[in-house]
Length: 115
Image (tube, rainbow, N blue to C red; front, side, top):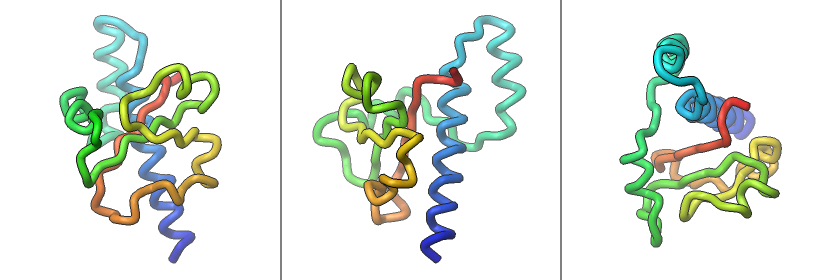
């Protein structure tokens, strides 16, 4: 059961990272719109800035967690969303215990983009 839960969390993490990466694209104009259309079918819940703003405040509202999946050094320590927890993608499996115990909590992951 623990192994299946770990796989589920990894799958959720990867989908959210890909969704955020799609929003971090550096493409402009038509190219950006076309790129968004190509990957839009892959994602069901892309977080808007307005949604993130609701949870990026101190104290952080209960029932949500913001996760910065960028490398701790130099990215996270140079700046991160208020209340975000550092869980670098490369260390995710080792830090899975940082995730909320309540499986109904909202998880918002962000990264540095597709590159």
